[in-house]
Image 1 (tube, helix red, strand yellow):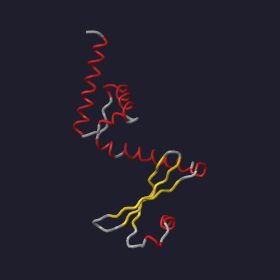
Image 2 (image 1 turned 180 degrees about the horizontal axis):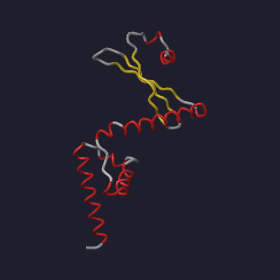
Image 3 (image 1 turned 45 degrees about the vertical axis):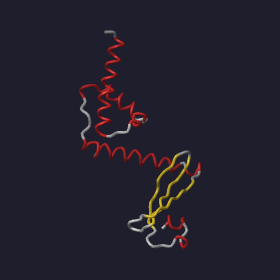
Image 4 (image 1 turned 90 degrees about the vertical axis):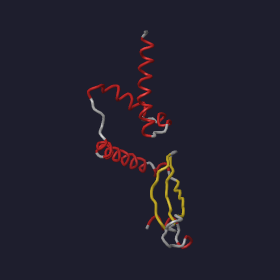
Length: 138
């Protein structure tokens, strides 16, 4: 067996394990195209056998909290660019057919990034009586 064959066999084994996890948890195959997929594989390779993977409670607790804080910081930095670059405010409305409530979603678009900002219900207000701008501010 050559070194090339050994590497090919090891890569196949890795693919099988990753594949089993994808299949078991219903992870869509395009998740392998995520910009975070290769870094996680590299991180696992670097830490080796001595580091245990995170537990479910860690992923749903402290690790998630750290990611939320990182995203909040990114959003604040992104908002700081708005006075320089400008933004487009977009809204989208829909009616919940069960509760008969109208919902409005507000998003911003700037520098090729869309950001969800706010969702509100009209709850009996007439659409023509309140401008969108006034409704967001209140």
